[in-house]
Amino acid sequence: MRGADRALIVAAALALATTACSSDPVTDVTEEPDDVVAAPEEPAELPPETADEPPAEDGEDARPEEPAPEPLDPLLGLEVEVVADGLSQPVGVAHHGADDRLFVVQRGGLVRAIAPDGTVADEPFLDVRDRITSGSIEQGLLGFAFHPDHPADPRVFAYFSVPGNDNHLVSYEVAPDGSRADTATEERLLVIDKHPERVRHNGGHVRFGPDGYLWVAVGDGAQASVNGQDPSTLLGTILRLDVDRGTPYAIPPDNPFVDGGGAPEVYHYGLRNPWRFTIDPVDGLVYIADVGQETVEEINIVPIEDAGLNFGWPILEGTLTFYGGEPDGELTDPVRELFHEDGHCSITGGEVYRGTAIPEYTGHYFHGDWCRGLMETFRFVDGEVTDVQDLTEDLEVAQPSSFGVDHDGEILIVDWGASALLRIVPVR
Image 1: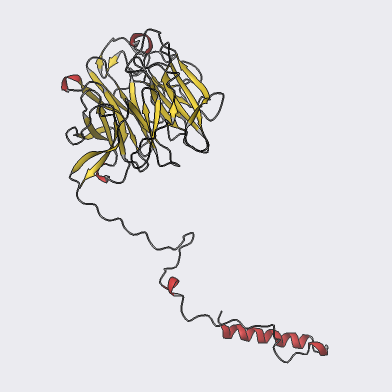
Image 2: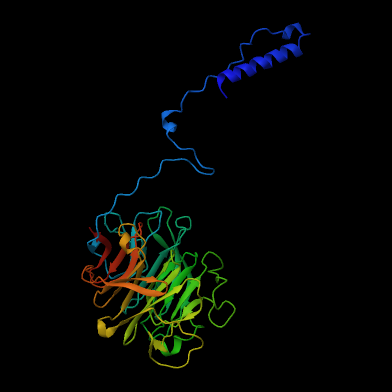
């Protein structure tokens, strides 16, 4: 409404008031009262900061568009850069969103914090050397993960071998200042019972899925013919636990054996030694790398919602007959087999690339081989493996013992042989 129109309305209102109250000499007003102020004229045009903005659509906040990202130079290849070195037998890496540090798991019982500049903290973030056993190369501190709501939920979760050769899954609370995990707060969630003379095939990878549950990879305890096809044991499995309910945990209601037929913690079985798995939340797929026995390494890829799958060990090694026999139900074949005769020896499962520095590799699954430092990648599209690439010459890694991602989604390689943490970067 413009000022002239508003002035006319004010004048009309005053005239009406004068007529209605003409019998009262006090209200016989012939001039506009001092306290009635006419509205100022609206500006002829909008202020400079809003004059050029388009009108906002319903429910939208009209703001200038974000500038388009600078185009990337052509990708010439990939290489690795050193994030940190001077580590001791590293087997894993983790991080959480409220902290710019990375946390490297060392088999001997320490978790070391690494600053963004690559400095390794002198004081360990977690020290469980006094409660583990690491006599075998497959024993020790094998897995570590932060609660996804950390630090609001201050817990971290660890998996390690103990004297007597059992494996423990435990949690600790991190000090309020974030400096360390307090071992005095240990809560034992699970004891993975093993034959006291069997030291190998412990698995040990722990991570939270996009479903909020804690997933745990457990080896068959080097007792293939006994445990692989028995879902009532925790050996040779992928477990799935709800650590936010129950004491010390609850069973997710959609776990396949919640009503019987197997241990309720078991989500998948028929695995030999699942050495590193990942869950891609974009495609909703679980990638499980399983170390072979004599002939072949295997990679299994299944939808996250598929439960109770039997991956065949020890009836099969990959798709080849091993012990043989009839399975109790259908077996799930691997999507990829890597044969020892081609130089493979001990697969290390990796990560699906979802970073931004190398968009040409979005959706690629990177994995390696511990024995010879082999490095490969492929995509899994519509149920098929495609775009397989051998990157061994480009990515110089001595012995990849694990993979991870940093805060930006770039892929990290835990290099046991070089005692280092590496990052895959583009060459442009």
